[in-house]
Length: 440
Image 1 (cartoon, rainbow, N blue to C red):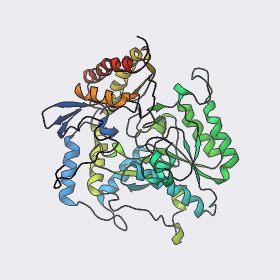
Image 2 (cartoon, one colour; image 1 turned 180 degrees about the vertical axis):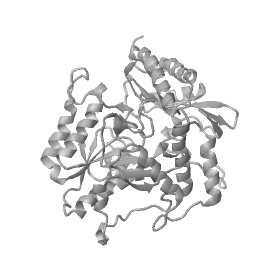
Image 3 (cartoon, rainbow, N blue to C red; image 1 turned 45 degrees about the vertical axis):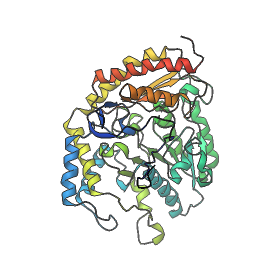
């Protein structure tokens, strides 16, 4: 490497063990165009952020107009119209009790805000012993220290054990690998019992429970029954424990409703949103909470100030992008597109479920997952880089979570394009046969 040229260090990528990163020069709808003229169908929304297709003109125009007017102003002691408009727009679509919004930069920081608010809330009430956090098995909430702490043990966290805060852990509703040995057809959500017992015994020292509602993303696209989320809300309320809903992935239509919590008629104490908030254009996040929480941070007592912030909090350009993104929900048939995606998932997944190399298929809203049967299951499965390279050669961006291949496209994908994605996955199963003992 020339000493005059800096090396680009890509996240979650093993240098030399994966294909050379394609250089993308433009995006249009569901396609990315590389500098060598190839078109790659983005079947995972560029890490789950893109909602309405790449380079949507309405969002691009809003960004340009705002940049020409006001690029940034500190949000400590100042405000601006794009943030005020965004707060008003979000207030119309989130559950009504979530009336207070704190902006931050990305999903990890939105989670950090919720965790810190939950702990400080109880301290402000004179109940400082309530400072423990409960999180689920298979959880992933981000890569900053607090978010990493509530994430489960995994290759994402193994190198940083000394930086993680100890957390309490409880069962996930991973029906394909039931933690209590039951089947979904006959169970009564017994996986919830462990949490209920934990809160009954230690609720006096537990500040909050954090969940990815209905869909655990990086843990393997694990779909939970709605009854599980409703049960988590019930037992946290029964034991005076706060509920944090990490909707960073699930928000803005991914699960078929605007927010996953709405599918289970659940109102959390905190809701974290990011990723799709700006339609995939810019980084912006928010933590929403209730009057009950906010009141503990008001008044003249310095101990009640929330000492947390970011230089780019509520950046006007990002807020303008978010406003344009939410306007698209009003002006285009977004939820009709979501239903069309779900129909293709429902039509195509049964053929995979019948394949001997497939351990499980699952879907919710626009998200589908195919869990492959391999001897080294997990994020570090040796099959993952082989599949990734296969898909890129076919012109499809699919980045498996180990032995779990998932499909999470922009909403503008056409049915024939989504069928092509599924055809590509079907053709890749030959690699699975070679890597595993399954018989065809």
